Image 1 (cartoon, rainbow, N blue to C red):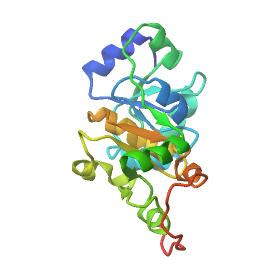
Image 2: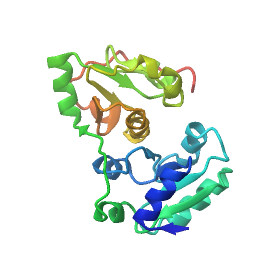
Image 3: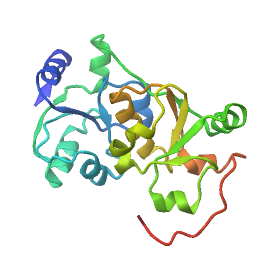
Image 4: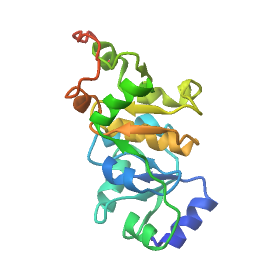
Amino acid sequence: MPLIAEEFELVANETHALVLDTRDAEDFSKGFIPNSVNIGLAGSFAQWVGEMIPNVKQEILLITEEGKEEEALTRLSRVGYDHSIGYLKGGFKTWKEAGKEVDQVQRITPEAFEKNLKSDKVKVIDFRKKSEYDSEHVVDAMNIPLNQINQNLAQIPKEEPFMIHCAGGYRSMIAASILKQRGWSNFVDVRGGLDAIKNTDAKLTEYVCPTTLL
């Protein structure tokens, strides 16, 4: 069901619906509805919906790129999520044009990441799988696999600044949206993830061929 901004806001406030934003990570970072979770249609959408939304009966309000509403609904339904109760008509642009509150995630370049590492010794959180982390990671980075983020929130600093990344930027933006939803704002996300960090002089551990896919 298409909802204009006012209706969308009303339904979001009056239900326990999860606001799911399926736009690209870069677009999401520049502006999104506060408390929405980003799982991009262009990535491993079904896998991460399944990992991050444990209850298939969870009511969902959708934000998509304009014209992608049916695709998002179909792909949710395909993995058993049939409780979408509406989508934002015209996409995020209509929310912004209505003058509603907007949140953002700050993204930095891999070069800025390297510079911050050298100057500040800022904590780094790597949201890749354990096997990816064990294979190669930024020296001193903490590993919290994305599917374990909710069980490990106590490990994430509330006061001091930190930087987050995954392999390419898709999973770290899911993590960023969840952190924002839970009240964190003292972090930045690295655009392009470890794939891009490898092109800088940031110190990485010696590569070890992975023995597991976990």
